[in-house]
Length: 214
Image (tube, rainbow, N blue to C red; front, side, top):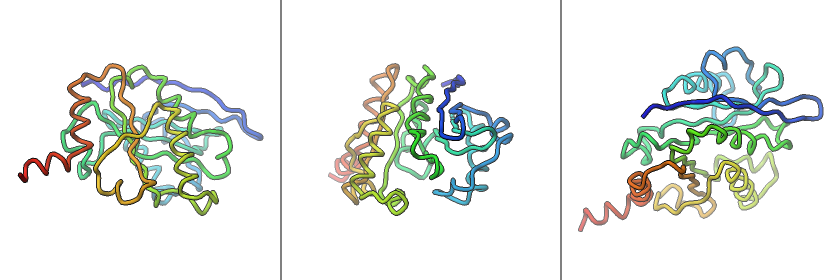
């Protein structure tokens, strides 16, 4: 599978800045920018920036960013699932994971997250993928936003919906460990039925293992 990437962009007018939403970008393009110090949800900002630069040059990797002038204030990542995760079990070339999405706190009132997803889906080649993301309540900024678990879940689900992702059932134990956790996915228009069936099997690996037991 050849992972074609086509650049798209749009802008958002903020109170003091014009925010550019763009991508996918290469590692070299990313390295020309600065990285906002508030982007620290997953690891220290510099370490996260280094990770984004690396992912951008993966064959299937996609990084889209939101920036003010030369400073990245938000991003979204797409790449194949981690080899240690269940979602990589079948090595599906056309399965990619929305691995992380983050926006600096001071810019969260401009719908940057949903715009990042909309710009991601402007690339027609995304219709060749099954895109998944896993949401765990312990990753959510409940303290910073003041939202309850269910309020935050609603916000996340609505934002992911901007990219066409919707909840899918699964027997994944980690997702099942709390009712607010969820699997969301989008199945592209060009995905063959064989891959859709494989994704169904992947979501219910427990069922498959029970059959093997008996």
